Image (cartoon, rainbow, N blue to C red):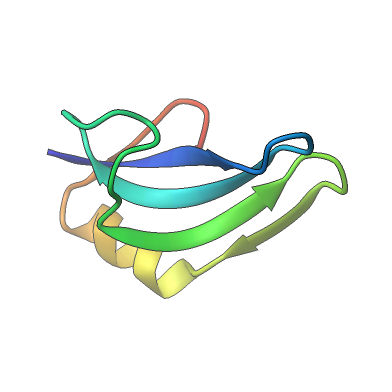
Length: 67
């Protein structure tokens, strides 16, 4: 099963990538596709909406933090 999750990047300043990832892999594991990013410091978000809608249309679910 595939979920959309937040994947942390950056050491001192957290930046999160929104990725499609297999449920069995850990948060920092290999992702299937990058579909956006979120910067909590500047509150900036970029979403690849066609890719996200494609995953949701195929029945993928989202993590509670990334929805």
